[in-house]
Image 1: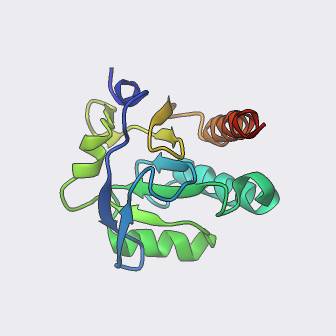
Image 2: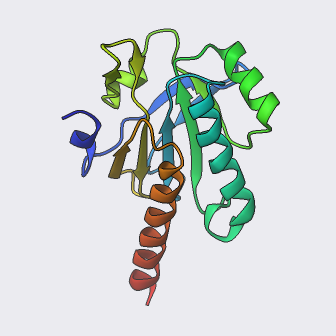
Length: 167
């Protein structure tokens, strides 16, 4: 099954180096806002660039739903810190781009599978609610822009749930 096995479970916490080399701790459920984890195969490839830039642009266009007080967006790949930094700088990404190059431990925790006879990692996006529970996983290698729509739909769902509970 893979990544979908985590739906309904508490999301694992972890720390990885950010694109600037500093440790970045992800502790689902502690910030009070949803987290979106975007696992992509490699920084700077055409599909990953399209996906990352679509997320960046959506954050800028819809700050009322994609702003830092509404969602914590985090990219993760097996690319090195140096490659992640180049990627962030070249495309002016506005969210953390973490490197899981050393051990691949976080990709294993989140059950990121392989494609192309094991030559590359899958492209998977997770939505984690404000309590730290994995609500959904979207595994789509070729439909890079579909990940943005997946996140947008889930942010709408989470916002509607929040509105209902506050009424």
